[in-house]
Image (cartoon, rainbow, N blue to C red; front, top):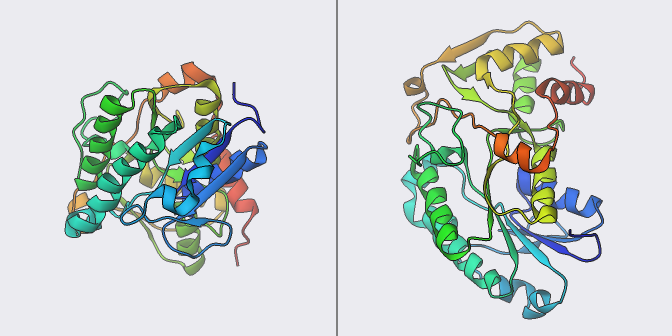
Length: 300
């Protein structure tokens, strides 16, 4: 059992939506936690670019030689799916080559590895996949993540791999689709959703709690960390509008009409029962997250 003061967290990609919340949660529990960012933007974060840097050069060898257990949580990636197709050299350098180099560098110090993968390791044809379902990446981004997963299975079998779905938040200052929908409501524009997209929206603070639990309980292997609720995206948009007390026009369009450069998974929801059995963690309902979000904004 990891106790505050006896273990540390290093969050790679702490400037991103999920990484920021993992860093905040680890700190709130009393752990010493350090976060990185690819470029110098936020104070308090170490600059570390997966494509060019080595983590020991950025933090110093003494950081890893300390005697307290260390968890390295890898959230950093270029997640722009179209860019992964159109800029293969840069995105692969970050998502695969640099990530594998980082894994090797921290494994030398017996760090506990937690890797955030994606539900896009599946093609979205069936949905509600378990951890044992054969991988069939939906796009290049999914292939990048699947490649790192395969590397971990062979070279770091004691690592934990998390596959999330859409993460949502209650902070109107952060970028997530409740904020996007709120802006559309405020300006009277329609909410346009992908037809037939089935998702498991998961509160980002629950994802952060899950990472801490995985480390505290010493869990290994692959876990789908998702809210057990799932929705068609357009229906969730209608529920959001209803809760906000605002009439709006929710539209759906087929995937092909979005003209993405690379494919998207339609039925992206995952079966998270393995993680629930392992931890007993209660996920925050989507309705509760919506209410928290709406309490933090005012409609004019």
